[in-house]
Image (cartoon, rainbow, N blue to C red; front, side):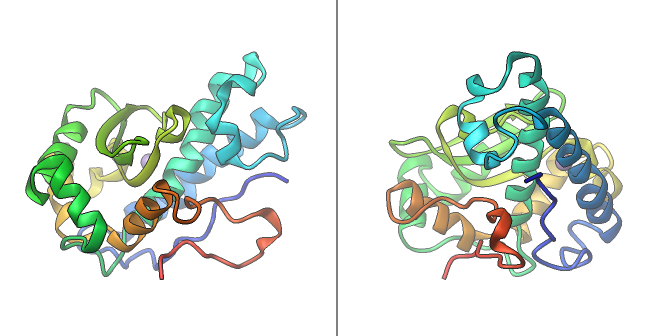
Length: 224
Ligand code: MN3
């Protein structure tokens, strides 16, 4: 069963004025679609053609060597972008509560300390890539990844991911990646989703996965 781009969990213009409708349309309908098409082409005819993308990315060594680069880049692009859509909410922003707030405080000193780290990882990512809040098995960490590399290939659970490729912000922010990250933090982080991922990383439930091919329209990606 080939992969497909899941529908956005909100309207294309729902994140305005932070990310405009045109950016979301091109990013979701063109960029994400291209990763899906190329991942499907790379995996077609291999033993992994029917495997969940999460299971492919968790062990890229199982991918035939001549397909591995394409699967890492495009399968990673598919997973990362769906995570990115889930990492944002029209009702997002503010600060998380509960156990996640406590864990952020102990890992980074304070919420603002965490924000500074995530922005720094994004701003300092050379070229294109991602900035992530992850659980690495022992606690929370901020990591940057180049290109479409992703945390699950490194055995980490992503809680939030921010796309810092220029196509994510160029129309709204031109070359100002730092300004994009500041605007992103003000209004968009989907803390409910991050809290769900945090609980799963600690063994309370399963981390988010793409819906199974037979799950139809069901989208069970939100906490609570
Ligand atoms: Mn992108």
